[in-house]
Length: 139
Image 1 (cartoon, helix red, strand yellow):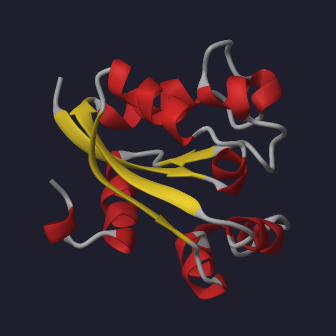
Image 2 (tube, one colour):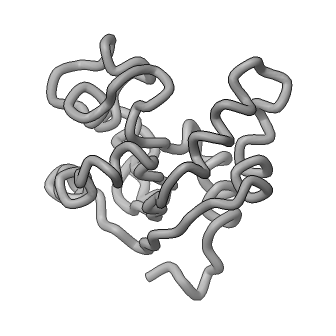
């Protein structure tokens, strides 16, 4: 397996629900190291740029509004096959369809408030990490 980095965001519902520690523990006990982490509020511009790939989709404005509704925790996770491992730990986008024990099954409410975001490919992970972190902030 290859050592990789991926981006993870604990969304406003995860932060408001006091699940930060539980989510980080799940990553760390499953072989992912936190290489960078920060809590912040996303501006409409920052969230809009980050989710620009969805701009033509009907849920785009609602997504940007939601992601700016409260603080988020943004992390760079590192480990063997980190992108896929993070995807597996998150579970399906719709928490009702997510496997038991996954982050979204445990903490997500619905498809719109599903607690976490994770990069879907190594290429996107690199772009997403660079959106939020300078190289000097990753350890």
